[in-house]
Length: 240
Length: 216
Image (tube, rainbow over all chains, first blue to last red; front, side):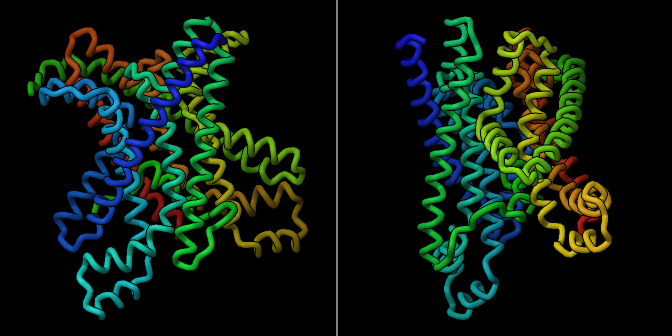
């Protein structure tokens, strides 16, 4: 491969990383807002949040990307820059999966903690901010780490829309060289390295956050988590 | 915003064709992933680490890289190596292989969840190794993992649109074809979007009733 083609690949990596960063932020924001809303005391808030989760988890990320790119512009009269369209589609879809993680972790906090907060006459918001979230967030990191890897894999989908990410640049190189095995092997390796770095990053974060609440990070195969993994990175929850 | 019901009714014949292909890919992909996942899980319990280590690395690699690029790899590289398969067959293999690395973890978790007393009882009864797996461990492990496997089938359903990129005409492929021929994007894309939500929601209801029956 010539240096010009490598430059193309590096540009692709940069686009992928940018897209990953923005959509991860949007997905995290959506996860927390929707996940917390699903524990709200008003049924209508719970129902709407559950409905959102079910709709966005129910549909395919690629279909959602097509929808944002082709249906939104004529329907609402505005067209998004590809980067923001991709961010929107990925962030909303993966945010729906993330909300299930947040809800699960909040539900797993010992109810006595919640009752203690009530006894001390904390407001619901104070209980959430000072009691529930500090204990729930460290537990969310391992499933969020899995979801981040899924999101990284999801970013490859925008190449179908002609956005110049890593997978797209790989296709260009294949067309230029008329040879596939080499470039796709490089591509897979690059994705794997990014995924590996992200996993390390999240492990460090888990260690730090768990130390804050006096816990050790878990090692090895977590059997319970593996059996539930499809629910938080796939579908299978329930409305409200 | 304009909505044309005629476009919807024009799209319907193609939609059913696409649905059929999607379900075919899903059924075959599931079978491959269930079988191959069990093979990986059993290999990960092999006594020699020269078996465990390569299996661990390969499956970790497949799990952490995009299915889309894996499909490109299979679709463009296999013919270079002299293996020619139809697009659908390539897609089914790709999706089955990708998800086998997930089902493998599910099987592993299920096998580890079998209480140690079961192993000890099998040893005490002097059951041969193969028999222990066949009649004691696997029946209990698989019962436990059916709901988790079912959830992966639903995830797989939502990854089938990726087969479009290797020219398989499943639901999204049909919708895109229709949209390009008639220049109407809204209707076909919305129809298949709703179809995905409906199918995966029904499937998750079905799964939950199955789960109640199996896991007690």
